Amino acid sequence: MSKAYPSNLTRVQYEFLSEMIPEPKPGGRKREVDIWEVLNGIFYVLVEGVRWRSLPGDFPAWQTVYTYFRNWRKDGTWLEIHDTLRQWTRIEQERHSSPSEAIIDSQSVKTAAMVHKAVGYDAGKKIKGRKRFMTVDTLGLVLRVLVTAASVGEREGGKKVLKRVKQSSNQVSRLTTIWVDGGFNGDPFMQWVMDFCRWIVQVVLRPEQTKGFVLLKKRWVVERTFGWLMGCRRLVRDYELLPETSETFIYLAMIRIMVRRLA
Image (cartoon, rainbow, N blue to C red; front, side, top):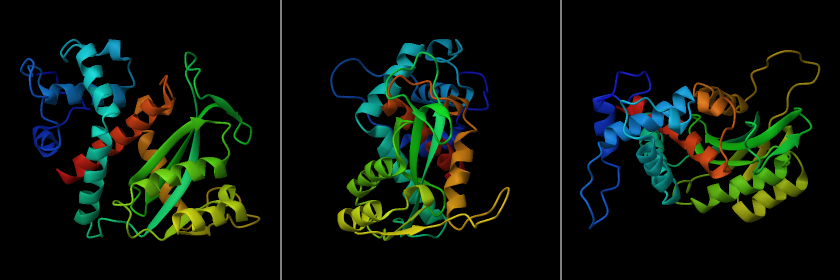
């Protein structure tokens, strides 16, 4: 058992999550590693922002921890766990498991020096790095996320992430309305959402001649979700060589939040 790191799952949280952990593949050697320790190692990397090779020695070998992380990313295990927890969290909050409204926004973050794939320059925010397109429900729970180069426009990225939401139709069967900011405003984008997704786009604009912070209807929810992610040091800057890995860490951050609430 590792030390009591702040990022560790409690026993109750692990038992709650363990029901969704895949069983070992038939054949071969028996699973010897403690999955609780593997999960704690993954969450340690997420929260503390260290390299895989820098995992403390009281966790399983970093190669083992990373292999579980990578394999479950590639076979969709993390996304399946995330979607299940989101439905349970909504039900626990006395909401329907499928949301009727969603909010979309983007966040540009700098990339580490060794990252070269899917990197661009966001001229509006003057950031060289990547852009996270996020869709959340009215509770701030993530539906789908897309990580691209920061140079990708709002409407182009918005279409791509909404395609992912549409593909998970069993998760969003009641979805009818998408709330966006002015960056997504425009007839081509709104018409595409109506034709392809059969959803209505509602634009929330910042009042003119206002200064400082303004609480905007619906849009503040996704901004709060971005704030939740900043509690994980691995997400403050994009260190991942692959955008898909960045997306997985975002889903993991939400898994950690939801399992702590539910357990």
